[in-house]
Length: 156
Image 1 (cartoon, rainbow, N blue to C red):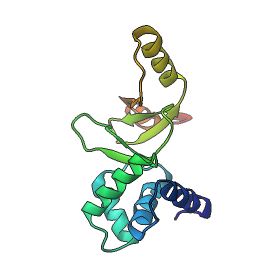
Image 2: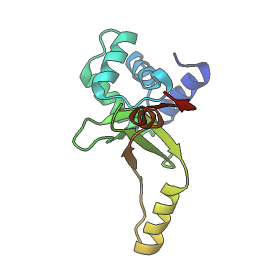
Image 3: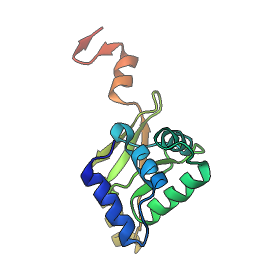
Image 4: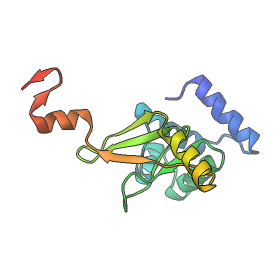
């Protein structure tokens, strides 16, 4: 469930863009906040939006996601080559994704790597990156521990 500040931010951003807050827009916004991390396929956004507001259809969800992207409220991420696009609430480029290839979890990592890439491209190649989409594939700590047969903090 969205809090008051969250709803005010959504409403203000929509109004600044010449749009109003509708039931389907509120439902999609809430769907993207479920479990706090987003990274939902369109099918998941549709299902969660319909849970909150029955009657929201797939076409409406696509239109709302496109509007949210245009307004800087949401962003698509290609977490797996050839896989579906995942949607989440917008975050700065400095957050990049760590995707576990075993369990499928996605974590945001904040660091200086994206800034270093931007600087390298600008200084070394005269290229200004508008957006940087970085996903690192590997194994999360839990899956690594499972593969090693250990439990965090000790041996099984």
